Image (cartoon, rainbow, N blue to C red; front, side, top):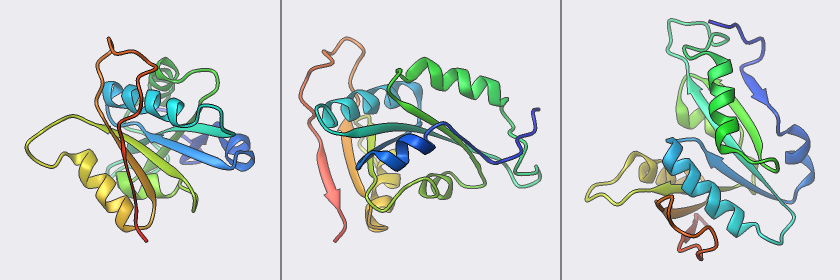
Length: 162
């Protein structure tokens, strides 16, 4: 295991401070993250935005928070395989997924999540509900297959807790 001096490996500091629209795509699964990333690019097309892909790596309690149970090099490679040149990557080590994600969100951040169709509430839908309840803007998009056109319109519901 590689020790991390700072539990946040952030490549997005400059981008986060300069762009007025902050689109955040939490890394859930590779397939869902890819769908959410495509939707975020369509939402931000033509606007001054930064798309940040945030990977929250949960570190169980017995371990020191500076030690990732998954090698950080592997996490970085996994993120690079999804992110484009214009996307900012951020890896956070945290005890809880949602707390780690909230630690990276700004007041006006827009969270973009993709979810599959299930007869029950998925973990992603529960996360979206919790973030909405906390006052964040959340855009949910349906999972799209790799064969779908990247220019298809975003069929999303935007929710904002007033």
